[in-house]
Picture (cartoon, rainbow, N blue to C red):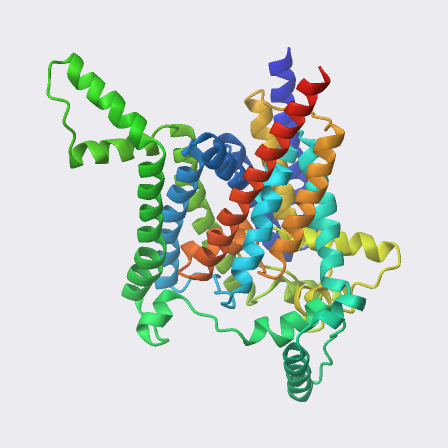
Length: 483
């Protein structure tokens, strides 16, 4: 009975999404652009849930239990995605762009890493876990990724007194140049406005392909520079390190034991090391398979969005919103948040800002929403539909696998979800990305920023795991003492 009920729910959710897509299409063909986001989000959600893909789980499993399954699956996905990215770049069908390079990436990644461990899920992991019925993850999404981010980019007051004078000076110079060039007076009020305009915008942006080609990459540079040097080699090296410190000892012990049973000399060589690596990669076929599919799907997403932009002759969905008469949805420069690829957190921040504006908080007076990303109505927000698609796709997969379970969190989990979500929100904004946009997409796209952010994320996750272990042991000791 339960299995039939879950199957019915899976078909119902999918049917509702089909109906919503048809209604958008009937309203205006421009909404095809938004519909693409819906269904790629749905696909991501199904794959994330099936493969149990979560960067927080990968860190927790590795550092707390020595289990590399999830970390290896993520690296497999990154390798495949980097090759697809290089192919798309070579045929001029990529929407990827590098991020400003700097120490802020390492710091932001560390804050995000601690947050995702405390919350029990990274940005993408929290979304798919909401689809599984995990209310702790819902708290992290609502109060951290939504409201926390929105407040973070708009708050001023005492925080403005902590800014370096160089940020203020460069921000004023940049604002004057923009006004002279376009006549637009950009809103610089919060500390984040000064950080963005006076610091981040002045940092270099590059990929390895551009670096090794002098700024004029050809096809070979995309494959050698972006894919091989920036993505594949580092990912394989990390796999080797993980293998050496975690599963190798157990694998070799079993190998020697098996050789003794067969009456052979228990000596191991290079071929055995490769066998051990392969055993690690295939330890969970489910996760590794989804890693391959996630990498390919992320590439197809970029290809499809590039095709949509060519079809409608635009570079941003904001142009289409204006053609449909929705001028209040877009930023001062006529844009909305439209990454063109798999991305999380900015759209959740828009939800928080939308909610706060309904309560009278002006969210158009900052750079993040007012000038860069806009603040569209929720039902016209393309990237938000991608996040909703992830939740619903994960819900469908969880229902089909009979893994859906509505989980009310304890008070302790409420605290972890709330605090972890806030840290994820705070850690994603200075870096302009999270575990997906800040690490996965950038590292696979040839941007060394991805590895800087990823390093910070791993460091933060390590200390987050250590803190949780300490807290758990402390609680157990307290309970035993009371007993």
